[in-house]
Length: 213
Image (tube, rainbow, N blue to C red; front, side):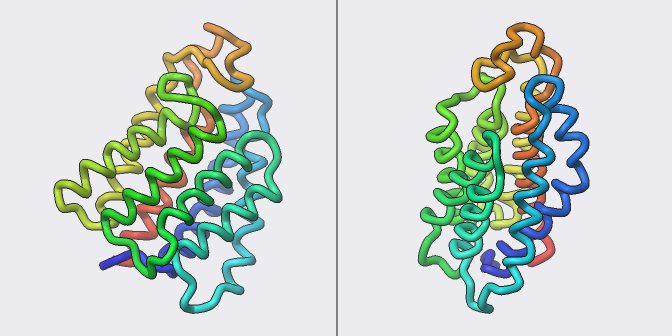
């Protein structure tokens, strides 16, 4: 079963819930190596998305919902997270434009485009201790899962699991991008907040997909 617009709406709703639930945690992670506004900014952005979802037509496509979320985040969230996640979702919406449902390959295309959007906007690469360290393994896992015949929900589950592993793996890294890079070796031992929030958002996507299956 493919993932349609209703799934995308459920994903954004689940994302808002998980961000609200972990808002303080994300603030704390960001305070340790950044400016402490990551959780607050994401909570504000996803909270702004939710009321707009009710106005979407019944035949809204995944691309429609992703574009709505992207433009809302870009317009309402300050700091780095708004432009980064906004660009990720905007590139994702373009990648799946014209599809009423996403199969496993469609999910891979969506995640790959989101990853590339983050890299393009943030000018970061794997190992820099940023959200790219969660997005890259997520895409790799999604590609492998799709190639093995996994369902769209299975592809997202693999991506979410790999994203969390990637987030954990940022802890021993020295940051090379963003405010955390000013800390040098003092950033070692702290998890990147963007990588952690990426893991939460992809798990929300997988949870919504499992519910739709």
